[in-house]
Length: 432
Ligand code: UD1
Image (cartoon, rainbow, N blue to C red; front, side, top):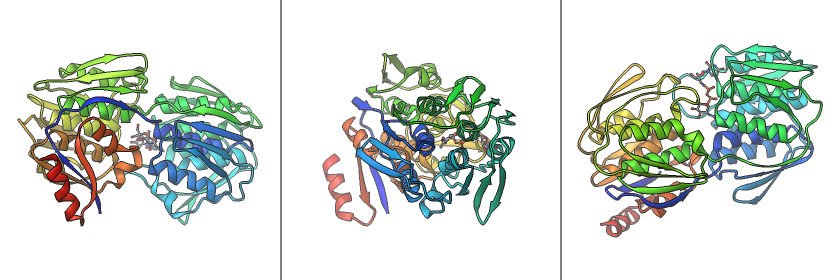
């Protein structure tokens, strides 16, 4: 099994470049199949979840040309099936965007129920509500979401809860429905806006994204486009926290500081320094950081995808902190792993009560999901001695060149096979 081995105690310094937003890219790649013309997408992150999604659309007949690592051309004029039933597509949550996209274009879709990170129960009732309101018949059969209709018709839809996935999915289908669709209680996350901007660049008529009411006038056809995906808010936030945790000083480039405001506010509150530039952000910290109360919320609140990184940082901050997870119901699994490193955290229902300790000590820890995996790497950067984080698969699903970027910032981290004793010895000799 592949694992990261980290020797803690080195402050991160230097510059790092953030890649394109994974969660926007997943929606955008699904949207790309809605036109018969070619689309060119830039700033596509080269991570496993994206590559699974590209494979899935290729398997239903789309032509996918990877011009370079982060640019892809897609032509979906020859899609030959609406049944996206492949093993790898089951692994990713966002496979469900192919329901909205294919329903919009072909009025028919069959896609496996989504997999993805195991962070609690993840129903799709609001996606189904959206499709049904547009006139589709939706049923779950043999593990597939099957949706079809003769004709999609615009409607007024009020979501019962704020869902990024349901907002994007319904928006995809509604783009090619007859007439006007109004989505109320819509998600406002930057990646919802980015998917809408991409659809608009293809000739869709979507207004109001970034607010909780989105208005979509259906169009009969979408056309080709060239588009560059926004920077990844969570990758940027992860490096911001890694800088503060390691008492480092780093410049994070290719970011939209506005998208990072909730993260910046928390770092400032606990005593780190954050300086914003047009498209970069500098984070530095020295000495002990302070405690905080944090509650995850929908955008522009503090993102749930930064919750494990925040809890990890607070584990070695002064005083008692409280982190409340209000989006997912089982997102504290990594806390047991932090405890193995000496953290003092008690989880009660959806709240973690953290008593800051002086230091963490290296241990072998298990990464239960993507963001928790990144948080455990941050814990390793802070800990005395060696930390082993395994497996790396989850982390690689969402972070491009994670260990290379960390190495570039001076972290003592490498990826090795757990069986490769020689490589482990070599790393230890090298980093001392
Ligand atoms: C997306 C992100 C994920 C992020 C999450 C919240 C992608 C691929 N993933 O996930 O990284 O953590 O937003 O910002 O973009 N819910 C329902 N019914 C539904 C849909 C959702 O009850 O039909 C609930 C979920 O269980 C959860 C909450 O709504 O409690 C928010 O989920 P949602 O915003 O849909 O998250 P995802 O789109 O799955």
